[in-house]
Amino acid sequence: MLLAVDAGNTNIVFALLEDGIIRARWRIATDARRTADQYAVWLHQLLELEGYGRDAVDAVIVGTVVPRALHNLDVLARKYFGVEPLVAGQSGAEWGVALDVAEPRTVGADRVLNAIAAHAAHPGDLIVIDFGTATTFDVVDYSGAYKGGIIAPGINLSLDALVTAAARLPRIAIEAPSGNLSVIGRTTEDQMHIGIYWGYVAMIEGLVARMKAEIGRPVTVIATGGLATLFDQHSAIFDAIEPDLTIQGLGLLYARSKRPT
Image 1 (cartoon, rainbow, N blue to C red):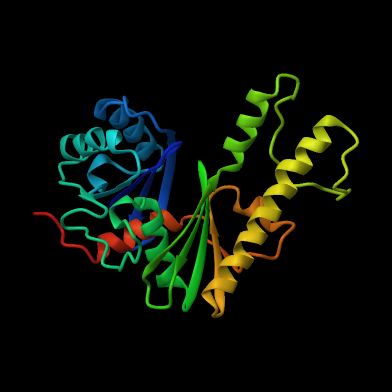
Image 2 (spheres, rainbow, N blue to C red):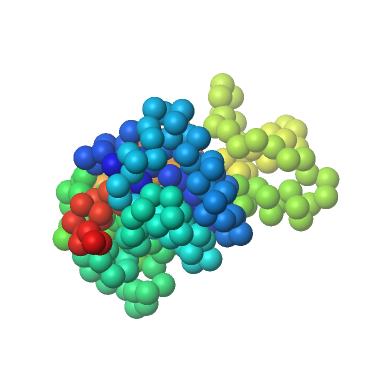
């Protein structure tokens, strides 16, 4: 089986794939100081809970936007699974898609992986919205080329900044409104919920409308990331929600990449 590792700024997701199907997935907070030995103890216990032994893993592919985390993930693959890992975008696992932007080397691995998976699943021009530490909007054309996009602060990041900077504002949970959908808050907490939730909906809808107008052709909007379903409750902007897009991209990249010997 393939162990796909998506190392993001906030969390690292480990997923076990068999013939492109996700059999299990686990999440741990990103910490560049975490050693290969620490990963191994944690991961081996989780494998056993799912009924798999260490020898079930015969290949590893890593996609990361945290360069400092890569070394220990590489050691994990070599020392504890006995395989040479593929690294998304590097030798043996080149993207295989055009990065039609001014600075291709600066495009995050997660964004290219999302583009690969979205293009494989949906025809035509696409906008892929990923709700992570940052909220990214990526344009993929009908040929699968990555054309660029937008980076906005993630909703949790925005809320943390608001609470940190304003001493009297309480920390609130991010949730979709239910019942009363008024956008005129009567309490401080209501006003914060409205500002964060409806403000974010307005940003998403406004940016997507501008992107569609600039593309000038029919566009399918794909959402991924844990908060996608939260906004889908009160907006018709998404045509599809793909919660495992980055992991699926890793699986597709591995399938068409040169396997290390």
